[in-house]
Image (cartoon, rainbow, N blue to C red; front, top):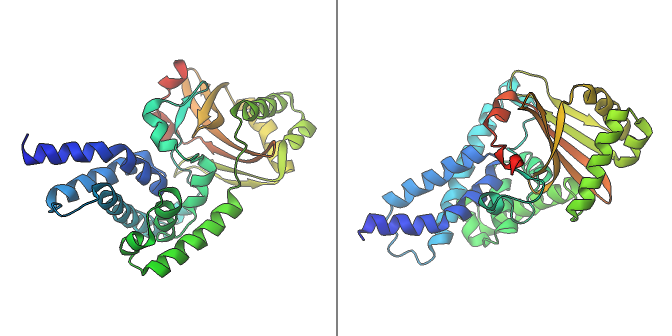
Length: 294
């Protein structure tokens, strides 16, 4: 085995972990793959003979690459079109369980609601929080990634943690009970039962919809507004197929065999705290929904 092949094998042993790190950082499967590929290029160009912890070295490299991508994304948001709601890429699995190939992306219960909150963090806050709180990377190793001292990196993570915990409460862990709430919500929407819908919703429920760069999306807040919108939307919902969306009970809407929406529910204390709706045709067309047929 030559040196390049040996290096490639060592890298492949860490690819799944690096992809999970990048997905949490970026909220995009394709960009996560790009970040991991860039880490491979950097590894191939570097002398790592004295690196004792290759996994740690690669994790910080991916962190730096992701931070550059986050900063570039933030700069583009000066364009008015970038002010719309943009949801992270959902990970779709069959209602019976998570695809083994996707399991690493969803470790630590990284639901879509958490990723939505991470999208609101400043570029340097996100890697500080993700690396430390989700992957236990020491602040001494995070500091060079974000270009700060370890103490300043700790402050970044702490600030992010407070925002995350305030905006993304822990979801109910029982998937079967989540499914009961989601099914009841769909049934009430189809029946036009406003009172039943309000009873299923947290008073401060938030709905975020992402319809694509050239279509209006946005936010709806409050149980009454969300219930009214659900009754209206049920007229055009198509066929609802149960699914797991980032490991939680969700729904994929289809029409004539094509996906028209993905709905991710965050359920806390038996009520729906938030709903994320992806109905961007371009992004829906890229999703692999064959897992729903298994």
